[in-house]
Length: 140
Picture 1 (tube, rainbow, N blue to C red):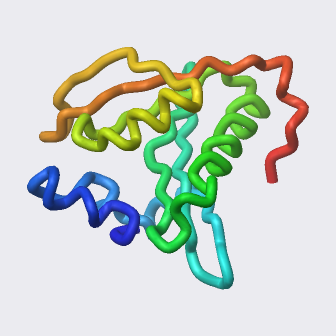
Picture 2 (picture 1 turned 90 degrees about the horizontal axis):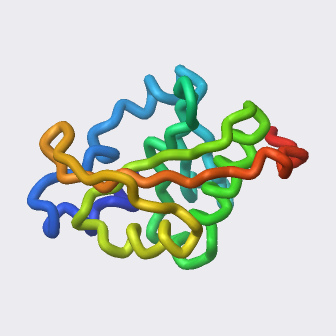
């Protein structure tokens, strides 16, 4: 998803972590869901089940598809996925220089709970508590 993160390279002075991921390995592990638009990858989300939460380790939408609520739909999918698995919390982290993402996540009900340097990146850690009584949403 270089297309989704390329705009941050200059601001950060290096490639964001998602640009260096081995997506073949991630797909093989079964933790990637892809949004296909007109036979091309429009976006993706990487979800990892942890002991007490589901980690959204990447959510990305290609530049040609941004501004059409696809990121929100991918995050809605993450909520349904977590609820179906009995998890009442989602977590994610983003680079503190990705100001736009921080505002988006806050508008969607995410709350910051920590900031720290991790793997050479200054990260903002966020979580979203989920109401498990809404777990009737099917996940495919």
